[in-house]
Length: 283
Length: 178
Image (cartoon, rainbow over all chains, first blue to last red; front, side, top):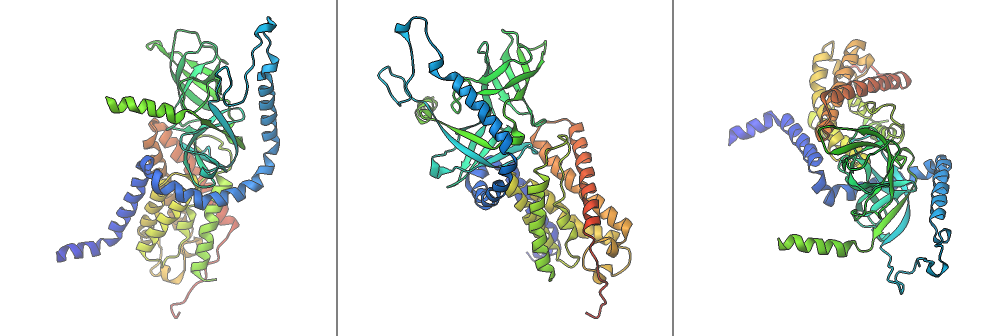
């Protein structure tokens, strides 16, 4: 026993170093489970206020670019208005009401909230950004986040007034996407290299893919409505031995200048999840 | 100003510069990430006990982790250099008792060549450990690892050189009567 104490006293510095190092490594490699409880809660409380103050200043320098993006989005939305479309036979004119339910059975599935991005990173392998809405405003985990021009990330933790969003530029990010022109689906992820490009895999070769083709979110995603822009094909890697394409995609969102974000809420998510979970428990 | 107050201000300043200036710069290349914050640990006084030094290193790294949402990444690297620092100083310090005559490591207290070696080795250790931990999480190839270590260290050393020239620290020679 005495020897143990002597040993500890003699090598106390080294042991203390090992303990600190192990604590750090534990946090690093157990981040997924760990962040739930402690880290992000504290992080958003402490750093959120500082980030918000900083963003107030930085905001003015990015106004021009943010404006341009918003104007573009407006234009796109105007083009989608139902007044723009007309069916030749006037008796069959269709329009959709925005009321939650109408007599034809249309219902609202997606609701949007707009938020400001108060801190952002593109430098790391795992990038996150913070938005200025939190649980108080109805933001919850696993909600999708869009920039004015396309998919941006997923909410992973919320505090009362802020939420942390896992950016698309995060190697843990996965998204189901499809080719806009033909509808084949595949998976999109980031390879950790360039902040302007993401990778798409598992796209079947049944349809030829060209440079410049548009990739949008698929109908299988529970976080985004279908048809949200992901990006355009920048390079097609044609692997002869495989039946699938690997695509390099230029992201629609400019992650270097992220100012505004829209949070998408799937109003049927809980129902869908409950239904799907019930099958899993029955197995 | 007492050493404690000075170092607390430095702590905040280094974090602030790293997060709100250097991390905001659009990366030139994916290999190049400008790190300078760990200079804080290299500038800490000689007399600080080794356990405290390790602890300060850990807390300093963790503070940066709070801003970058990467728990443990920078903390691990900072703990590493904070632990290795005393060994390196013991080897590199030129004359007997210099650590009693001067307050903290600098060109005047250690001499140019030993101080440069000290900075070079700890910068490399910091960046190797940091990039290694990041690299394990991503399946990149070895050249990615090597390139990133070298490019990041190069930028770090350049930034440290600029900092040393801009903020020249006068080290007073202290007699042992104090």
